[in-house]
Length: 140
Image 1 (cartoon, one colour):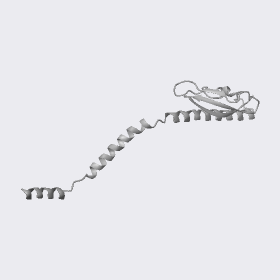
Image 2 (cartoon, one colour; image 1 turned 90 degrees about the horizontal axis):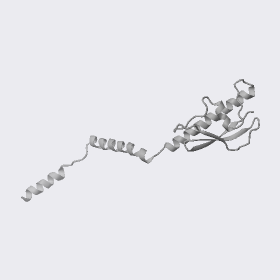
Image 3 (cartoon, one colour; image 1 turned 120 degrees about the vertical axis):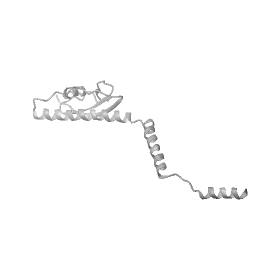
Image 4 (cartoon, one colour; image 1 turned 180 degrees about the vertical axis):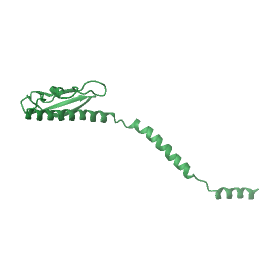
């Protein structure tokens, strides 16, 4: 009886079991899938995306203002008078852009009253709860 028990213990000690490579790969794949599903719940990038979208709008407005200023300087027939930041909508195709909620962005003077010819005004554009400043070359 004791010999049987000792023999069973020896067999158990000699029988080395472990995980196969396929089992380990499957565990790693499952952990990867779970991590991919869990990461978006902990990382909210929507605020950064909204800020980047508003920065893009501000850059487009600044570029349109620069192009209009150049047209003004060379006497082009396509020039538009821009006396303040609100006038930027006249030089944008389709007017002011809309934010992700479908609301038109708000453009305002940060330094009101700077409407002299050939000067720049600091403007702000607000959309999706984000505000970005840009400079706009004014023309009268």
